[in-house]
Length: 190
Image (cartoon, rainbow, N blue to C red; front, side, top):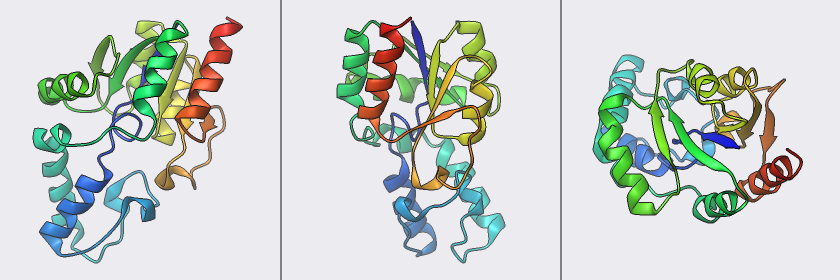
């Protein structure tokens, strides 16, 4: 069975690095645990929206952001447990393709057992998941999670910024421990 995994917010914790860059550029302190929107452009930090939007584009295009980011809590052990349970794991990310070398280096550095990584545009992950034949996906973007529910079991990993977003067809996961339990059940009864 094949599981498609989002990278940022699911495997890779970019929040602290982005918050540090916001503080450096704008002198505004914020913490990812207080962010209530998946789209960071909607954060109200008291900085000019156009400048903040440009900053976010620049930040998320910078390979250095990804190279220094830690893995999300519980990821390493969970992925190895899933592999032992028979799951094949692939990354499906909206990171631009020019970040592929930084992404592969980050995966290797953290020893994540991901077979391959697919870079695609926002809103098109479900097409990639369908083409790959995924049985399940784990995502942190509620819109993507709902689209992925057209393909197979879609799981939304709970984060402060996605809690207010309703999900209809996707199901929420409280943690990576929860993910392992649920995906191992799917594998067992497949």
